Length: 235
Image 1 (cartoon, helix red, strand yellow):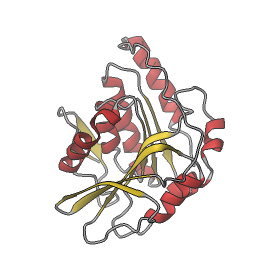
Image 2: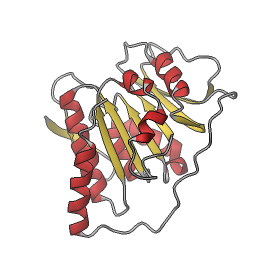
Image 3: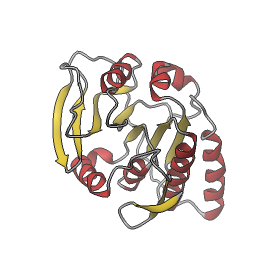
């Protein structure tokens, strides 16, 4: 475990040792946040194959209200949990973070309705606005993930899915999906896509934008304990 990763603003993150994950570079993270900009404010962010959780930490810092990360590797999931939790507690606004240690496909196949039944608040029970998909570059899993996002109704009609991939191997994206943007950054590339035109789902309104208060120390401690409980959830 090391602390070489940093988010914008200089905060240090933990990173898994060895080759268990491939963290998204700072250049790519910053570029993506600049592309999304206002879409991040109050957003519900789903991070699949999350690794260290660095991209989710950036999303929190740029205004996302909720981040749910799914990571199969136990050690990486633990580090992701620590990074997201530490980032959320440092911010002045209330945030919800959750890490699910398990297989992303199996988790998606359960569907949003099944997930919603386990939610204890309106903030949790929201479909996702922004979905970050960053599997191993040599893994052609993009079509299967996209299919399950639709079939499980995890996303909204205006959601954006961000695929990170190697320029040497372009993702096989079903033609029904609409390409919004594509960008290249050396050994990494990003493809932003939106759901097929015929995709239909009950539209979730964003949670009411209440005045978000700074958490006092006592509330931060309670927040920490409550969120740690959520991290015990398995797929």
